[in-house]
Image (cartoon, rainbow, N blue to C red; front, side, top):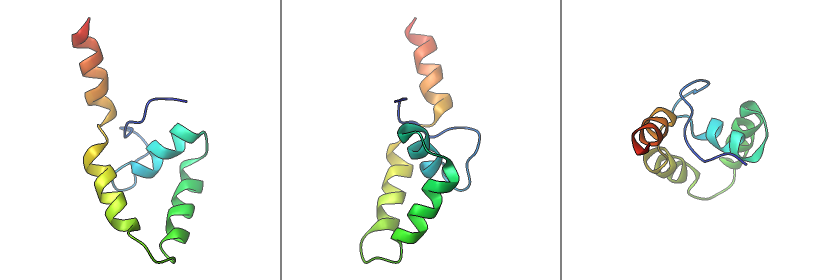
Length: 70
């Protein structure tokens, strides 16, 4: 499993679904469909998406931190 970070390529809105898809080894389209179907159920799906958008670092920031660490 790869590290959970929002990718710079393949984003639709915030890159949250693309990051989750990469983490769990599925396609981004599949993860987006799962998210849209889950929105039909009651619950805080949009709030969770926004929270992950804020909390997950962008992939370019993760790479720049790794380069400065060495």
